[in-house]
Image (cartoon, rainbow, N blue to C red; front, side, top):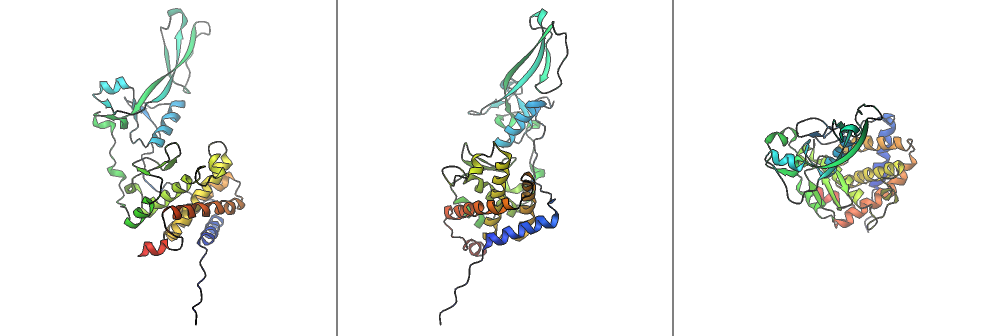
Length: 318
């Protein structure tokens, strides 16, 4: 007698339903927090420790996040030499701006000013003029041989989490390279790579891989892969950004489910999705639309890794 064919579980639908259930139970107020420890360079500062303000604060914070800089200190090439440092060959500077007021009568004398966006100086309208100029700075991470105080130690960020060999092997098969050591996690389209904090900063190693899966879903949204419309409009439209984040987090949940990581992290996924659903006025229809794109992304990831869906959990348990 032929054995009955076992019906395959629809893991993606189970995960989607469970996430919606958790969001509804919480009234859409599940708090999300980063699953890794970070110095979160919230206040970039000059070499002497004075914090940047206004537009310079934003420019340098974004640059530090995107390039994985771990020091809050920034300085010019000349200042680095004064401290005995040497800018590492090939490093690119970041331009910041300086706002000032000069006395017309003294041909540039009596200048004062500060970061653009900060508090503006006074002066009589007919006696002074305003000026704006830019200059190049380097993060201390880009400079060798500076005094020790410019390089914060990461010892207090180590949680003890260590790589899981079979999961390392799975993600290593994917075509998008992973650069570790960043302050944040992000997919960088311009270099087609993923920046990740070290796994030691994560509360649990599984959360590292859930975050990595999220970024791999973003990576397959580019035109040469799956060509997702919401990915293409990510930086131009808050709705598109919300949809792309829904896709990435649902895709991560689907991948984690196949890898056997779902139960302990369901609330993480639900909390993250809840925050983006607010941008879409909590319309659950977006979840189901995003789920279809997320499933395509998860399928792409497993195909790229050479693993058929349904076999990943067995491989993890082996």
